[in-house]
Image (cartoon, rainbow, N blue to C red; front, side, top):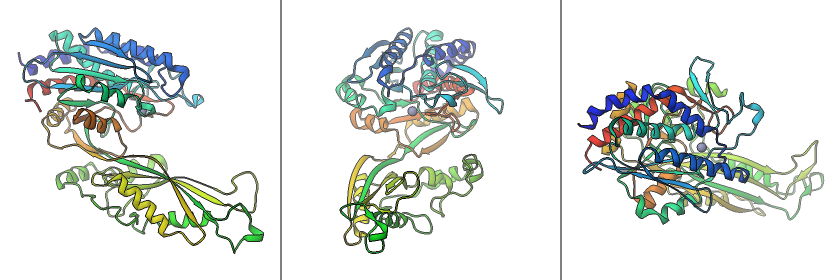
Length: 469
Ligand SMILES: [Zn+2]
């Protein structure tokens, strides 16, 4: 029997077993696997052990492996047989801290299905979406395949880490060290979202990041503004003038060379995105805004995902305490980040920014710079067979054409997979913008969880029937 013929009974099994799937997700959500806080290290271990035990019941050879930080899970199962692809699925069991606790409507590690204000059924708990709910959609799809057919439709390696929320700094060396045994044809990451509640999506581009800090220094000490004001340079004035000049009247960034290498979207993608009709009304109104602040000649959706940005994330300087103090500070500083798109080189952008600041310094002022982080943008090939197969499967499940979309943020693991394992990634997820990830009252729509499981069941079938590569 082809995997397409086996699919319907697998989908039926998912529906029939859904209450149990939910119960298994709840078991995982009850574990307080907060990676950032050393007080929860045992809970992280518990989450890894719990998941490993569960995945082992699906016929995977499963191990919990130590890293220099929280452990990782590696699980492998043969299923496909000759000619079928081998996929590497990635997820993370760690979650963000839960504070401020008083803003939660219920305890964050006591999951429950509740009613959203608009009537949707939602799963509420820390990790409900990011990433426990999302990773369990894949695990549950594997379970249904295994229980109906006795095997999996393709070869699968599952890796689940416990430090995504704190930068994966021990996981990347773990990948390097174990790259020989993590060979696969391509990777799957379930940590992204849908276009909207009814429209599935595959994320095909991720913006990069350059994060800079700049200190402007003038006099050798803080000064009395009555004695020195008018005659002495004020670093806050210098800093704000330079930062104010970063944008022109059309909200384009003025740093020379900033847009070098930035390409327009392919016409078919631009046409698809225009039809999505993302408006200020729908996107900005919920956050109390009304007019897009990016380049005036670009669609809002372009401003958010396919165009580079600059944001001042913090300004520090002078007297900020109670009351007043007539001081001219000796220094002022700012934290500035740039979201990058494909074609921009993070090192060149960093240098261009530093040159821009330095060229605008008045006499007696100097600038010092600090480099916080950088990552290039990623654009995945729009035309691979796995992507086309996943797109068809998602369209079948949701009854609506799956969108190829850009993500304004970065998911560093995608470039790590490319660099260490040579793998391209297909990014499929069922999160929604209102899931409150990293915030109080994190939720996952019950529909996201249910149809997410069904989607993966279909995607695995589509991979099995598509030729390799
Ligand atoms: Zn997260």
